[in-house]
Every structure is written in C-alpha cells, then in structure tokens.
Length: 454
Image (cartoon, rainbow, N blue to C red; front, side, top):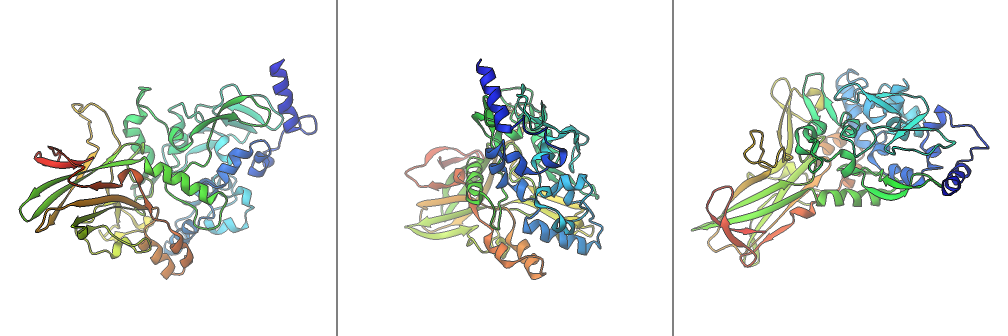
C-alpha cells in the first residue's frame, strides 16, 4: 500500500495521465527538468557548468584565439563549453553561441544524463545516446511519466567509473601533444583511484556532496546529490545563486591544504621553513587551467609588532606579476611557445612547466612510487632581533589578473570583469607562528632542531 501511494503521488506530480513522456527536444531544456527536479536545477543554475557558454573570460579568450589563429582554433573550446549544442551541430565557435537559445548553452542536464559511453581519455570523448533515457546514480529508479530512467555506473558517485564521466572533460590535450589540463590524470595517479574502498574517492564525492531527499516530488527518500559542483572558478557577472556558489567554493578551498611553519634561529636572523600539504583536493593543487591560475604564499615576519620581512603581499586588485619578490612561492604552470618564449596563450603552447602540490600516491613511505606531499620552501630572514611572529596564508585567484589586463587592453574584455575577479584565502593555510605556540622538534627539511607550529 505504501508503494502504491508513493507511486500515485509521483504520477500526479508529473501528470502522467495528461501527457505522454517528454520529447527529446523537451528534455534538452533544463526548465523542463525543473518541473520535477527543482532543487537540482536550482543548484545547477548557479554552477560553472551552467555558466560555461556565457563566461566572459571564456568568450574573450576564445575570440582572441580565433583571431590569432585565423580561425584554426575551430571548435576546440565549444566542444566542452557548449557540448550538447556542439553534438547537435549547432555551434562551431563561440561566435555561434549568440544565436542559440539559452537552454542549449553551457553543460546541461540533457548532456550529462544522456551519456552512455566514454570513447577516449580527454577533450570530451563522451557518447550521447539521445534516446530519451535519463541516466543517474539511483540503482532502482521509479518509473515516471516524464522520461525513461536508468542506473549507470558512470553517474553513480560510489563507482570509480563515474570519475571518468567528469574527468575526460577535464583533461585537455593540445594538437602539439601538450597535456594542458591534467585533473583526471592527476586523480588516476593518486591513491584516490585505488580499488581499496578505504582510500578511494571519486570526483562526485567531493564536488557533489550527498544529502537525504527525494529526487522528484512524490518519489521515495533517497540520497540525492548537490549539483552546484563547486571547484575554483566563479561567475563574474550577475548570475543565479552567485553568493551561494562562492560560499561553496570557499568551503572546498578551506579544506584543501594544510600548512606548517618551522623556525631555525641563528645569529643575524632566522631560517623559516614553510610547508604545504595537499590533503583533500583529490588531484594536484592547483589543477585544471594551471596556466591561468594564481596561487601563492603570503608570509609576513614581525619583530616587536612591526613587519621586517614580507613575501607575496599584494592588494586584492594588484596583479601578482607586478610584485618584485625574488622569494615569491607561486604554484601553477608556465607555458612556452615553439621558440621557447613564455606565453599564456594556450594555442601557442608547445611546452609546459608546472610547480604543483601533488596528491598522495600511496601511504607507504617505502613504496617505490611514494610521493612526499609535505612540500617545503625555505625563507632566509635577516634580523638583528629574534622574530616574535610569522603569519602565513595561501591566496588564490581563479584567473591571473595580468592575463585579464591583457584581454582588457586588447579590447576583448570589459574592465568590470577584471574588477570582479575574487582573491580567495584558503582557510586551512592561515597560520601564525609565535615562540609561545611553537614546539621544539627536528625539521623535516633540514634535519635540525626547529621551533614549529602547529
């Protein structure tokens, strides 16, 4: 009887008696999905998947790339930023997006939930069934009037296969053979892709947190998943759920890294060893568009309450590249063209050099593939008096300000977008060293006695 009541409620909610199942064209519109899945669509509406086709930075970089390559860039960008429209043959470049209805732009419900196979490892090799069946992570979906439903391991975040559904869109290869974005490969190389259930973790478990709830009105209570999918990038123009999106990004960043400070005092100053550890990213940190991101360490040493040494201190609206700081610890990548000149334009990149915080590969320090994720950097600080405080934090911008300055100067980007770029502080790295809080131990870097916090 209970099942019948629930089933009847679902039929009423989706009005089975009044209409046949939705057409393929109707399923392509997220507004249709919202009739039965309002929470999921609301969350998705503020995601970077929804924003992918209208992101002004994407549009600016794509426009510059098309101009500088005389159109040779082709559909390289839109195959990921408007994948459903691309598969339907409606777009070849971002210039075509303006003529598309909004529901075919971005990475939509219909694109992700109609994937039935993966036919490669990078650059969006997902195969669409386009058969009216919406696939998901519920193993025994309830029949409904809107569409046929099916469980798929590619959509079940408990399955390691589900990471390929996300990851193969987030690994990008250039025609030059350069592996430009490596998020999926980094996860595959880490212990999180292990068959050991005590170690493994999937993309969905971090970026699509679960909660109890009904997947649609009248359906039984299940474990449903957040469709905000926060990571690093954020909307920079008025957009649904914008504040909620940034809060979700901040929460994710706050738990990604931890830090430690060790001080070795000596005559004429001190050696400061600062350690960062990637404890929760699930891949390297930063990841994705590492050529464009700004991630750096801010360190301030004080004597008697006054700064005597700083590194990485910039205003939130100041480009990091303007800082004259030989000690700056910046994480990310540098690209080089075929002549060895540094370039930020990905279509010119023939070689990439990266300094990233690795994800753990194994917990066994004696294993041949062991990687030490406790990464140090040494600062030598001259001082006539003993240091009494050192404060540190890691800061992050989704896109480097000097790149945005170049797009603005060349007329591809509104200066207001540059002004809207946030600077995040990673909560897990905010640390203050004082003599009172420090403990004496052997430092991992130098093997000498040091005063360490935490």
